[in-house]
Length: 275
Image (cartoon, rainbow, N blue to C red; front, side):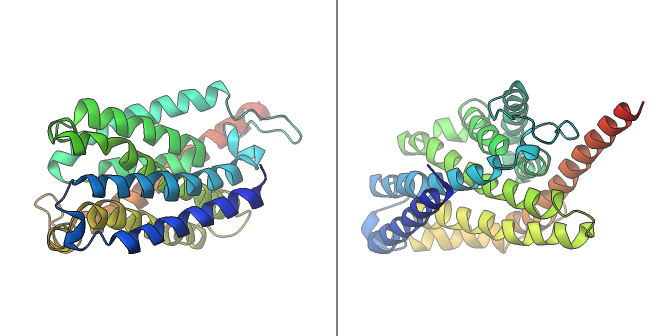
């Protein structure tokens, strides 16, 4: 399957998902209360019809650049790169474990999970970030954060689609970061970094706004949650709304940390070869 076909499938999936949302109108009372079967169905459509093809397309594009899919400093022009190399599986395991443990931060309303996966996007890119988050989100919500196994059948059934659309966000972010930051050549770092952040963060915010708040709740409940997480300050430091703190602190910090580690790996490899 080539890039053009995957792009068409992605666009079709996004269009079908948008039509389903417009037809089902989750903001109205017709779909019932939060957690109703109709809302669960729409969330699965959002995840599997809209988000999954979106993720596959950006992971495919990421995989087309061999240098991005090996440890920094180890690529040699013309070498054959296997996407399913031990490096990939180990990195997925590490990111999955870190992301799962970061689920503990949900209890104090600080988005450490976003910091972990943003670091992964900058360090490893699309493929590892997608599967690392998918594994870590499922494990975190099943075994670490009790809300997701104590909220009734609808909450339990939603773990997989929530994890899938969240992972899809970072498949895109990983590609964007490598495209604009790691492939910038001799261009300045700051404009490239800001470009990657500005392009990826709206996808992060909008996906959660639609996938969780709007699809999951009638308008009255959605408005309360939107105000609580985007407008009202959280009790944790530094007293900013949850998503504002995530977008302007945890995500950029994660990107910078992941980028720093990747650069350190590349320099270490170059120095070792010189010796």
